[in-house]
Image (cartoon, rainbow, N blue to C red; front, top):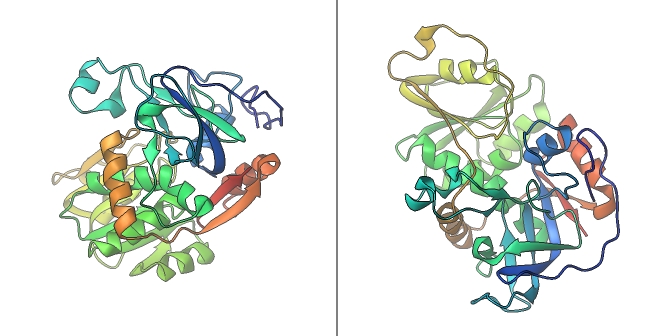
Length: 326
């Protein structure tokens, strides 16, 4: 399913089966979850988009071909492909264990073709081993971005944060809530006003409180994670956190943050973003997910129905994650 211009529907196309370059794998896609970043790609919210492009970056599949320079991967192995598809390896960020901030990165489904297809070609060095996961492909796919970015956001919120607020209870939040509960934290879920289904969903996953994003939680939060791409949620989250509380913005794109009074930031409150992920993040999260199986709530779509999946995500008609299944 190919995007030819921002704002247009994806088009179903038939191509010859790909061959790997020397350091690449060809992977038969078993499932690819749909991320809000895919909406930002399709809607033209992100700069320097390579066109035409096949979106999709939460990929689970099996290795079908191996490049001649690749060591450690065998045909038939289970593999995951995340958003971070490659880095330069020599800029200051890469050399100081911050490859998520690489000056010349490559991203799956944005600067190289992604997983809304029967096959994907990926840099073997950035592929992830999934042998330890108990979930089948359709339930494992959301772990490859919703899970990974949620994990990095939770780490940025601080290991000392016991009361956590999640603004926007979608694919990432429904996984982060389970991780936070396992770590002994109290989860507070914030949704659109009147979205009782999302609030019930959050409570079913262990949230101690669920309400609308313009409400105050029953107790001050130690930290809040903003997953919804809505800038006005940042001052709302600042108002909900305690002194020295942290607000983490987890999206790659967000509407403008409106002006707000300095008193919301004062008393050493912090606002920060999370950008992409590192392979170290991925290994740590997948090790956790192998030990503590996470329940992923999914709705499957045929490959040719990828536009329907994007529309359902855009309109908020989903609980959990949409997953494209070729």
